[in-house]
Length: 114
Image (cartoon, rainbow, N blue to C red; front, top):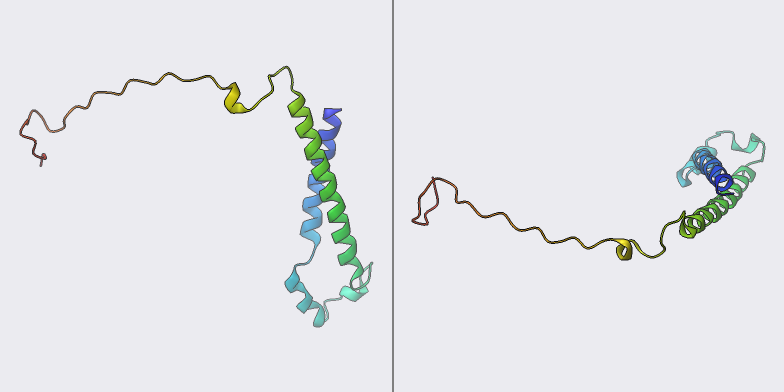
């Protein structure tokens, strides 16, 4: 079942990218005023925009649902303990700091070496 959700998720993601790239931006309306031929398209002058935006919205909803499904499968676990990552982490013992060695030889007068 999880594999099927993965396949649908990837296919929807590819289709979503394709549909977003096919759509015109808000600045593309100026080109239609100079005869770009949008009125002779398959869906008419504004029909293609409505069809593409509705299809994009449906695919975005499907993408969201498959994302939630994959989150459910991940939370259900594959034999892993549930909880947050912080709760599952082991405490790390503090490391001793390295001793500070003065630079510039054995000058003990406290002056800055040149």
